[in-house]
Image (cartoon, rainbow over all chains, first blue to last red):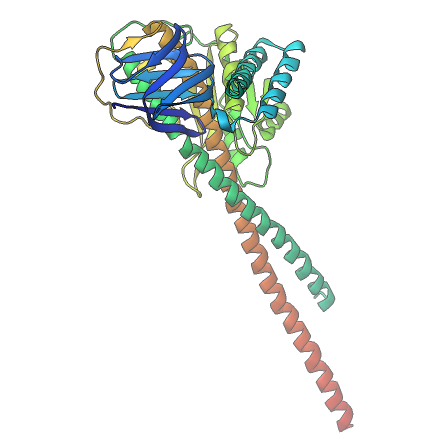
Length: 135
Length: 287
């Protein structure tokens, strides 16, 4: 079966690099599924969960916002966060979410608001992926 | 001439100083390795950002964005990135010397690192924001600085943003540099400091952009500006640690030289004392 090369890079390093069969993610235009031989596409990814199908098994990753480059045989993603479901520490993510919410209720400036909102979205994405795996 | 007890005391005190500087040298060396590794780990991300840039600008489309727009400069902001601590040779003062070229009346400062903030405050320049960055700079820290600078520029409070930081060349050399940050100008030629672009590869023509090329480009722009600051921070940190390592190594070497000299002097003094005593004994027997 034809596969796609999926590569996820963050400023801290390469977070994921493997051959997969399907990549599902949230883009600005809605959820998209990417299969091999996809048309050349560049899009913007929203924070949330990402589905990766490898050898018929589904894996979930929590990802931040980022940019996606799709060619027929490769998917490259530049994002500020990518965490595999099994390595998410739920307690830590929950704490991060609470911290972000507490910060939001304080009076803060616009710049801070943007960054807190972003970190809230990231911890929510992690929590979501983790909880879904349990059901 | 000091007594042998004084010399012994000095040797001991210089010895403990050397121990401290030696320890600091080791710590700086390991931290330097870490920040260099972090800079290397960021390479794939930077490469990918360049690829997006190349693809998105390949068509000769007009791209008008507030962040690209060049305005006459009436007021400028300077992002000054310096160390948190001293004891790193002339690193900070070399950087601060460059600040003199900016007119204090029309320049506002955004600082990263405690020394930068102290300098701006001490010289009575205008400080509008003070950021901190840790021993291993993180991307969120860089994003906060980038977002703040972007906000100032978009609100037209400033017409230009420059970055003043130290560029890491190698362990022995670090150069203070003054970089243009905003406006971006020609987006095609935009580069990230410390990471040169590769030669342009073939660009496919039928790329589909979602939602459209302009929106994609402006989103790319914000990522580009964040990673720019991130690279600057990593460079500054690596420079700081290597400068500290070198100056601490010099201090240790100097201390060891001093100890050698003092030991020689001490031994001479001791020998002189013994000779004198022997002479006294001999003299006592002769009489």
